[in-house]
Image 1 (tube, rainbow, N blue to C red):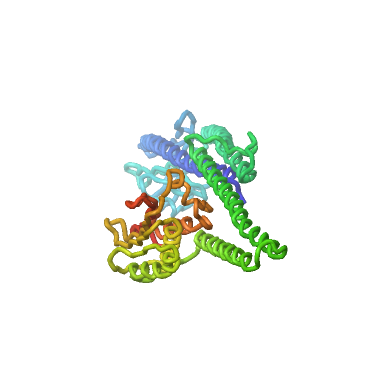
Image 2 (image 1 turned 135 degrees about the horizontal axis):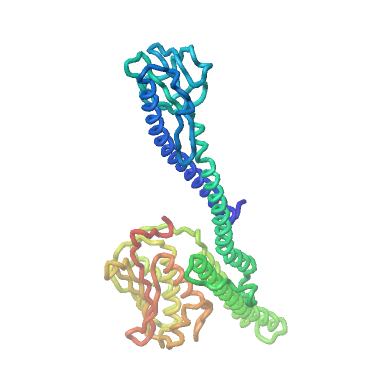
Length: 453
C-alpha cells in the first residue's frame, strides 16, 4: 500500500510533468509561429527581388545564393523554381529538377507544402509579361533549428526548476508526515490506565493545524476511553462487593445452621431473603447490560399510560399494604407509542424506591407533554425524608444504595432507558417534603430516529 508521502510525491511529480509538457508544447507553438511569420515576410521580399531580376526575361540572372535572408540573427538561403503554366520546371536552383513536371506544387501565393518529402515554406509570384511564375521556398527544418539552442536552455532551466520544486515538495511532505508518524506511534503504544511516560505515550502537542486538531481529537478520545475504563473497573469492583455481601451472608447462615447457632427456620429465612436479593441484583445487571447494547432494538406499542400506571400500582400494592402506605395514580388517560416493557420497568423501579423510603403515601403521575418539545412525563412523588444535596448528585450512580437501598441499580436502569428513548430523568424535592423523580420523554427531531427505526 502506498503511503501518504509517496502518494503526494507521485501526484507532485505527475503534475510537474504535465506542466512541463504543456509549457514545452506552448513554447514550440509560439516560437514556430514567430519564425514562420518572419520567414514568410523575408520570402516575399526575395520573390519581389526575383521578379525584378527577371523583368528583362533573362533567366540566367537567377542564382540561389542571391536569395538569402536573416531570421533571429541566422543567415538562411532560399531555393527557387521557375515553372510554366503546366507546372514544368524551366529553371531551378537544383539543376536535377529542371525539365520535370511537379503537379503537387500549389498555385497559392504562400503557404506550407511538401517537396521531396520535406515540409517547406513557400511564396509564389507570377512573372510579368512572361508565361511563368517563380516559386521560392525554404525548408522548415532550417527555421526550427534556430530555436533548438533556446529550447535546450529552456529545458535545462525547467529541469533545474523541476528538481528544486521536487526537493522542496519532499521537504514539505516530510515535515507534514512527521507529526502523523508520531501520532501513529503514540496511538500504537496507547493503553488505557497506563501511566503516561513523557516522549513515549503522550500524544503530540496540538496546535491550530489540521494535524494538531487531529492530535487533540485523539487526546480527547483517549481521555474518554480512560474514563470509561475507570468506570468499568469501578463497576466491576462494586459488582464484586455487592455480590459478595449476600453470598457471604448465605454461607455464614449455612455454617450457623450446621453448628446449630441459629434455628433452621431463622437461618433459611435469611438465606431466602439474601438469595432473592442476589437474584434481583443479577437480573438488574443483565437488564443494564442489555440497555447498554448499541444494537438492541425496542418494538414500539401504542398503550394507555394511565392504565399501565394502574397496573404498576397494583403490582406494588401488597408491599405498600404491608407498610400501611397509600398509593394512587394521578392524571388523565391517554395513549402513546412507547417501548411498553421498558416504560413499565421505569414505573416499577421508581415505585419500589418510593415504597422503601416513603412515610405514608406515594403518587404516580402520568401526563401528556405540556410544551411542544415534550411528548409525556412520568413522575413518582412520596412524603419520605427526601435526599440531601450530596445524595442528589450520587443517587443516579451505579450501586449507590443510600440508607435503605437494595442493589443501587434501579435508578441507573431508569436513566439508561430514558436516555435511549430520547428522554431524561431528574430529581426534585416533593411538595410533601419527600422525593420526586420525573421522567420526561421528548419528541424526536426531524433529523433524529427512534432506537427501533
